[in-house]
Amino acid sequence: MAFLWAVACLALLWGSPLCPFASPTGCGVPAISPSVYYSERIVNGQNAVPGSWPWQVSLQTRSGSHFCGGSLINENWVVTAAHCNFNPYSHVVVLGEYNLNSNSESTQVKTVSRAITNPNWNANTFNSDITLLKLSSPAQLGPRVSPVCLPPANLVLPTNLQCVTTGWGPLATRLQQVTLPLISSSQCMQYWGNRITNSMLCAGGVGASSCQGDSGGPLVYQNGNVWTLIGIVSFGNSNCNVRMPAIYTRVSLFRNWIDYVVAQG
Image (cartoon, rainbow, N blue to C red; front, side, top):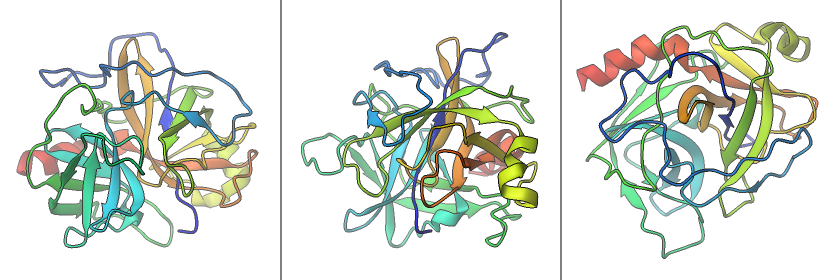
């Protein structure tokens, strides 16, 4: 991919919390609160509060070069995009990262014992763009490293749900965030045509861009004080066109597959 970016999605919804299987420490609740400002015209993002997106991980080469994002879903597993092509022999997962140029942060660098890509992944259409990474040793959970909640299977989300993109992108050294709305599949297809399938979500296209992040990163929304992972950054416009929506893997469609793989260990 000539462009790398990542995303998270934010809003308050009515109804019960969507974290029925919260970890003992509580999934989706950052110990350090994020500071989010809604704007339809943020393109280059703003610095995130350090530690406020504790499930955000950096996928790096063993020499320390960042190339994709991902999300911690429990102490043993990270979810990312299949197109990131994570290789356990040459890549690592870095947790607790904020400033890519800092050597003073207490990050956790984890090797991966298994990288499991969804069997329906199609590199030509980007359908089923999801991979699970089994960490070789459990993440040490704390204020700056904690998991995001998973959505229930086939969760239906409202159009115009306000989103926040997070990631480092090709230029930023500090973790960035940007807001943008979820849009309907029919509206998305006006830009992308039949490339859009039921395994995808669309966000942006109304004056905001998700270019300041990384592929494989999280798309989450907030219900009460709980953040839930609804998407994985998949593909978009390489020129950061603020009128062009970006595409995310619809996590709820793969919830049963995720549960099955995690249960198998």
